[in-house]
Image (cartoon, rainbow over all chains, first blue to last red; front, side, top):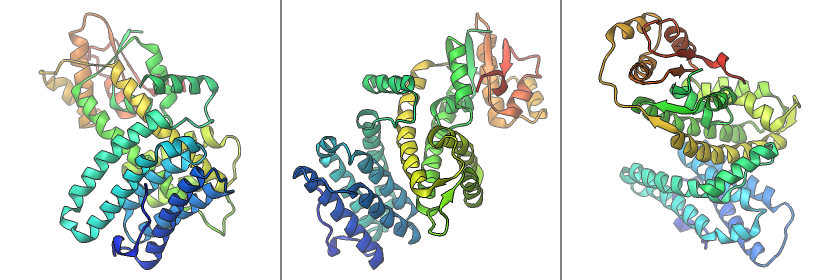
Length: 161
Length: 222
């Protein structure tokens, strides 16, 4: 399960405001999992998550951590699209836990051992690509912007892949 | 029309990315032939461009979500996205971003000319989701469809210099000669399709090329 963020675990490359934004988004992810497990529906939680992860991403970018900003957004975009599909989100709790923890480690490496950071980033990207491929071929659903025939075609490909 | 086609990299890339002004033309290419060929050079260029374009488009749409929200601006238009891309990017990422805007607007927004930021960002989320699904599926299908041609050993120096004199870029000359080599030693006619204007204009005016026909983007329906 995703762990609460504690001050001492967070790399000090982040400013206080960014640190707070990070704690907020991680706490919210935990809250969403527990609300779903307790079968509690909370209005606007999806929008709250969106605002929260975007707030942290904007701060990361403002502080020059562009690569981490886009990676974090990409993880959150997957999570965001599953919030309405509660059973599947719970079924992928470990999947997201691994991704968010790997992201924490990447940030930690940036401050603690910047020489090894590039190596860590390559490893992160390799693992992230595998997980992203799994998510977009086996979990994600196409949006409703396609004509039905195209949607059917995409769905049949998804089954075959 | 020949049944076999040798494809330039831009044709394969346009086939994989649905938010692309040439996507429908590329689909028409793949509906028009029975066998599709590429060389090692085209395959490697395709793999490099696939990663680059996916990264560029993700970055562009994520940047719009990050930076375009503005309490002083209630509505956004297609022009706002184009201006944002022109102002903030250059080179390949600018080309990739700008060529994706109209297809994005047509597919996800529709006929509205002005939309709220909230509506825009919801549709960007759908677009990014579909982009990642489509590139996985289309990329996988494309690699199954494409047949690798034998490695070219001949240099065809004369044709090389004619193409160069007609303004065809070095990489496009390599692609054209790879296709030419394959077509020369094939028992049945082979067409060459490129969506690059300079490559099309150059290759279609060289009589020595073995292609049955050289076709450009305007030969296929959009």
